[in-house]
Length: 599
Image (cartoon, rainbow, N blue to C red; front, side, top):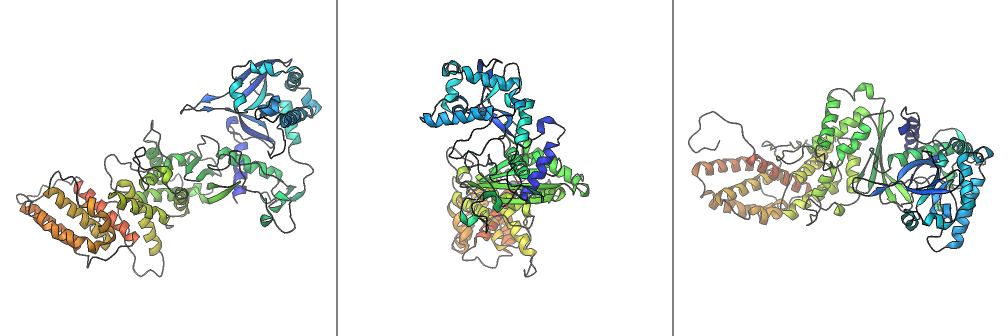
């Protein structure tokens, strides 16, 4: 299913009316070439061109070109056509292995000489062959960019003086590459992707761009041990899961395109490199990273604007029944030694996919301060549940369990009644206890996790009595004892603050962790101590607090000995809601009130 969807996306991009968006054909790939050997028609070296340019962070990135498909690199010698490393192209040793470099260079030149006659007659190929007849290392050593190319054994290719394209992009060469694409002698089998008989691809092109995987690339489809081989397919590699050569090229090209650097259709969530695409062109393909990603510093409102645009499209029917035929694909990949693991995959109608994203932000909706973002990014939510450091006061993202982010994204697209990972709730509650603080991001995460658990439990026929989902703001009618104890703790803290203005530390700094986990050991003491604080307040204000406490405790029969972790989350929500309600601006009431009664 995944390979079929990627193959369909490849065909869609190949048919794009915009030439800049078209993907390479079979036998052609997109490759970053940092240095070009610009040569004259007689083969003389004109200059070594540095194609690299600094990005927004100042890092030099090489220009990308369409070149003949690279060979599968192993421990042996295998040369690419008209592009490769310094050792292959120029025969100059960079790692102290002169004999091996000589063999590499000889094979590189031999591949050029083996081109068909039509390609050998091309002016660009003739210039390359002339170059090798007269080349000496002294010529390249005189070039300013040579030390950098030599140090990194950089990839090189050729360009004829006066041309814009590379020699390997000249029409005669491209046609020769397409004619030679595929292995005509390969065994023909039923392709699992296309369903037709086709030459089987023995070794699939490596997938690059998956965070944490090998820099040279890794594979989704591969077999390197007897345990993974089918019966009767011993050491027959690709025949264990037969994919035709054309289909293998299509899905690998499409996936490498989606995973490329600065791709607008990918996000990195923990160890899961996640890509998005649709059967038909959709603005949502490139909007997803803005919706879930952290907004850039120069455009802090990008995240909110993307979410608002999604909500507007849903309300306007843009993702309605007419768009149901357009399916949206979400694929999460993570590294696994020399292979790539599929962490999750979802294929949804566009309307349903938009609704699930909207439900995610509805679950996170929470009363907030003036400077808290309306739609928190996934990065900020993860940072809030991990340990803060002096360099990362919002939370060190490196300390987040690597599989947590991917599990959250998986739950978002799996459906509104699929619980978020319990690890997220555990981490949020744990940070609240460790730091004696419930901030906006932790409260939003706790509410989202609890509401999904409640929704799943309420949908079960065996559930005795449905539980009420938590609101974004204070809910005085919520009967949950843990929620009310959280409200009670916030009210007791507020009494202490008003009784002792300017106090440096409140009961939260000393008792929050114990109150949220072992209430009976704390609240009896706190309720006794609050009487001393109430005596310091004005009579009317004290009476108002007494009424509030009575209202909160009305549904609490007794303080439990211990609270399980989900109830500790309910406690945190009650505390956060009640604190926010104390500082919220109340509507002006024009009804006359007794003197001293709080408005």
